[in-house]
Image (cartoon, rainbow, N blue to C red; front, side, top):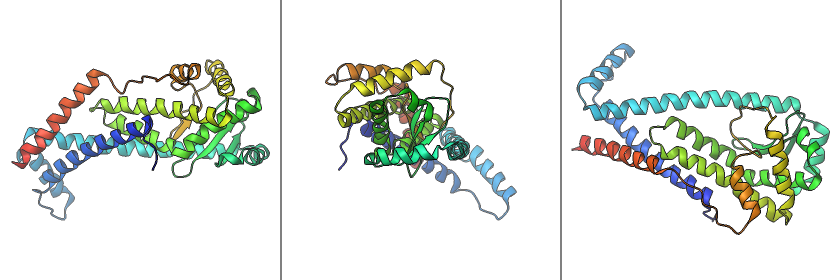
Length: 288
C-alpha cells in the first residue's frame, strides 16, 4: 500500500470534496429533468426544460442546475483546449528530439526506469509529461548548463513525478479547482499539492544521489535562468522549475525541519463551508 504522504492526502481530500459536489449537482440536475416530457423534438424539449426550470422548482434547485451547467460546460471547454495544447506540445517534442542524445541518455540513465527525451531548445527546462504514459523531457540548453551529477539529480527528481503520475493528477486538480472556483478551498488544496509533489521529488532525488549539493546547485542555476527564461503554456506536466522555490530552498537548508505549508486560508475554508451547507440544504429541502 502506498504511503499517505502530504501530497497523497491532499489529493484524496480534494477527490472526496469534488466527488461530493458532483453528487449534489448531478442529483439536482436529475431531479430537475425527471419532470420533463421527453417528446422526440428538440424544440419541445428545450421549451419543456425552460418551463420546468422557471416555474416548477425552487430558486435553490434552479441555482444548483445553473451551477452544474456552468461547471460541465466550462470543464468541457477547458479539457478540449488543453488536449489541443498537449497535442501541440507532443508535436513540438517529436520534431525537436535530439535522437543521438536521447539514445545516450536512455542508456546512461536507464536505471531510473522511465523514458527520457532530449529536445533541442534554447530554454533550460526539464519536466515530466504525459497522461497515461509519462516520460522525462529535458532540453539541450539545460544539459549544457549542468554538471553530470546535477543532471542526474534533475532526472531523478523528474523520475519521482513519473513514478507517482503527478502530471495528470496535477492537471486534474488545477482544472477542477478552476471550474469549481465557487468552492475556494479547492484552489488552496491544488496549490498545496503542487508544492508537496516538488518537495517530495526533491527528497527522492537527494536520497538517490546521497548528496543534496547536486540538486541544490541545479535549482540555483534554474533560478538564475528564470529571469530570462521564456514561458511555455504547458498542460499535463510537472516540471523542474521554480515552483515552490522558497519551500524547496528551506528544505535543502535543513532536511529534518518540518515544513509548514498552509492548505488554504481561513476565509476560503469558511466560504466553502457556507457554500457546502447551502448546497446540501437545497438538496435536502427538495427531498422533503
